[in-house]
Image (cartoon, rainbow, N blue to C red):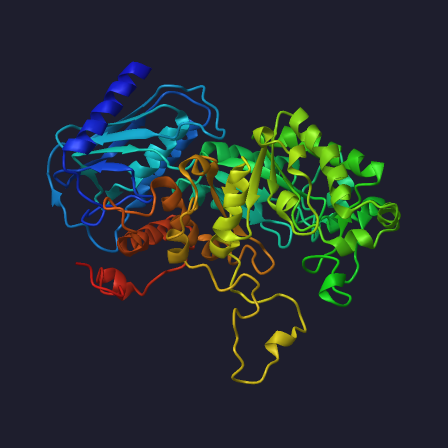
Length: 574
């Protein structure tokens, strides 16, 4: 399909959206999660779905596997909705084919790639069409199409046109695989579920102070001595499989090598480059802390050997991960850990500062990241920390992205007003580990007289971030129009102090689904009102479909509420 033809169709759809009444999500008998930007369905109806249904599409190394996957899924799902759609069934010709047309097959999966698509399912023909600019947009359209098929024998919603594209280009999940290990199959299941929710970035926080599970050919001792064991490592082949699986699902895999803090797991391999390794994390007062939590160790920026090791890792990671984003961490550099080192003590005695020590590290590693044709991503601490931070001038906004996790909308404002493109992961809204208490043992806050106010239950970021809290959060709140354009999107984060494979699905889903819809199509209805109320029924149905697909998402309501839509709201809809 030519660009001119695609533009003509798109403009016609905009005309339809403006002048033809479309059924709203509130009244729609069949829904798609995330809700599409434009869903024109003037006369809701369903038609038979042919048992010999086929999908035709151009050959592509990643779209073709996606087509085959969706074809199998649609043909075998026999999905039974929790609430049977109240919709007219027209015994017309069964839908026989879906024809996919892609304008730019050469478009790579990278930040900013076009993910738009247009899906048309006529009620009086036996063929549907899916048009997109790129293969990645076609994948998004395939997911939407799959959610329009239900029943046994199968039927499909018809007489509709969907025109869809995301609000934010960066929509992700961060998973920490250092504190507790997750098997490769767990990561693949996560990526598959992300794709179903139209999330497009898997931020892989691979290493931390607790373990170094990534096997590197250039530095084999790091995993050999720093992982939890040979059965809890990620081989080169594992990484390639995960990255390839991501491409087949339209999900970018971005690695994070957290440093110079959070590097205690490097110490057994290279004790000479790690300060305060294997020391008790909290020897006295809060000012004496050696780490943000148990698991001590920071890289020593004053030791030349540090950069030999770091550059070896950087170089190999860029061969394993093709994405142009590279996350360099730089959060939670704790003064006590560096002060415990004799080399750094000598530097400080000569009127040096800890911020200057961090600047030495950033000035020695940041240019190397850029030399590998990568865009550097850092946690906000690197320029916003109250004690140890660098001068922002050494991290130009043109080649640097910041990720915010503290201070809610205030820190987002600080970053974008300084000109930085920003990824929002506010702990107040997007941290999925919050609300499970503190993991430290012998903790006196849990040994209080009965009747003592429990506060957040010992969780530093408690209470739990519910799906409704996540859904109602506007990540550009308080920003000017110009500032808002610098917000690339958001990521929910699951830090794994108290999570592993056993609880992975339920910790992430459906709360990540809430963020997925907000970043794709927003959290407001056509009147500009928050729509979390009507989203509840739709999310219940989506949870059911995810569970049927093998994702163990947790419920958000009793089944009675689902069978009686709207009856469990705090206020009856007008």
